[in-house]
Length: 200
Image (cartoon, rainbow, N blue to C red):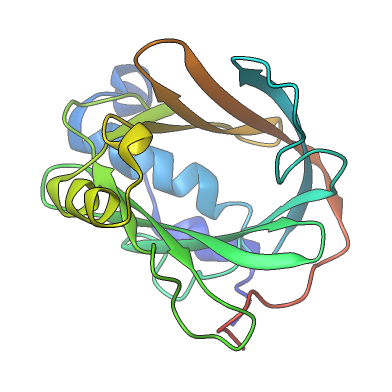
C-alpha cells in the first residue's frame, strides 16, 4: 500500500495560493505537504509533556516513529501510524471534508480488533494554515469519552504542524495547561516499522 513520493503530484497550487494559505486551499496544501512524505517513516521526540508528572507515561523511554503509509487517495485521506516502541496500536487518520480536515485516532488491539476507545477526534472549525491545522473534539468523541469515564478528555484539541522536509508536530492540548507535543524530523527518514495492528 506504500505510495511513491510522486503521488503528491496531484496537488497543484499557484504562487498566490501558496502565499494565501487560508480556507480550503490551506487544507489542500496541508494534505499535499504531508503526502509528499508518503512511504517514509520518521523518528520523533517529545518536546512538551505538561504538566510534569512524577510517574512514567506510555511514551517515556520509547522509540517514537511516524509512518506516512495510507496514501491510496492522498488528496482525500492519509493514514499515519504512530508507533510507540513495540506498541503498534495507533494510527492517525487525516481526511478531507467539505469545509476543511478531519482527524481521527484509530486504536487497535494486537489481534487487529478495535479498542473500546477508537476513532475519536474532530474537525477543523477555522481555516487554519498550510502549516498548521487544529481539531477540537467532536460530539461523537465526547460521548465516547463520557461513556468510558475519560472526563479529562472532554475538552481535547488536537493539532498538527508540517514543514516539508523539516518537521512534523502532533499536539494534544486541554484548558488548564495540558500540552503534549511530539516533533518528528522529516529531514532524516528511518527504517520502516511493521504494519500497524489491524493493517496489512
